[in-house]
View 1: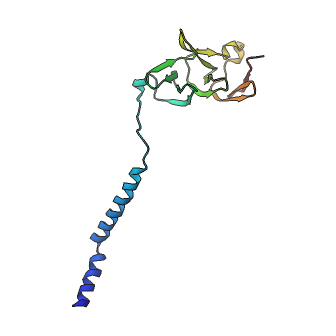
View 2 (view 1 turned 30 degrees about the vertical axis):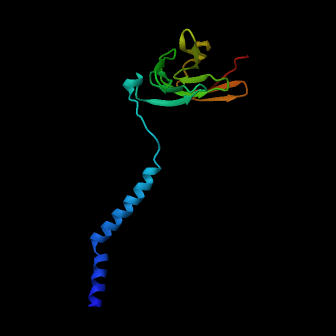
View 3 (view 1 turned 90 degrees about the vertical axis):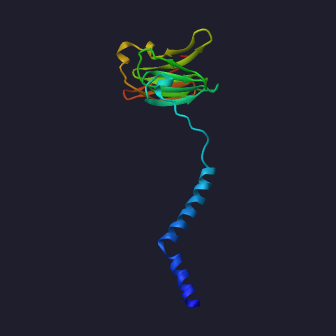
Length: 168
């Protein structure tokens, strides 16, 4: 009789149903712990909300907490409540955004580079630095990187590197 009881317990614990139940219990315990470690709230903003294309190439946050998004239609600025579109002077894709040491947000676009200025009366405006280039130097495609070194600002493109110094 005792031998039959042990055999029954052995047979019970080696069946597929028991393994399934044990696996389910372990999975519940693990998922319970994983749920406690999930991040906070995630919200998706579709393009019809921020009034631009779904392609967002870059983003940067300034010292005031505003977030700037580089899109196919220009720079979209979000203050936590409102969205505002700022077009670059040639209405091209904005592939690069960088926050400068002076607090300005610098913009790299297709054959254009400059910065965003917030005028209390006129609002946000794009100020082009590349508009001061001679016409034969304006066909340089996308600006992919902006680097700050001392007082100089470098705009990197496939065609070359442009150096800007406000004091010179």
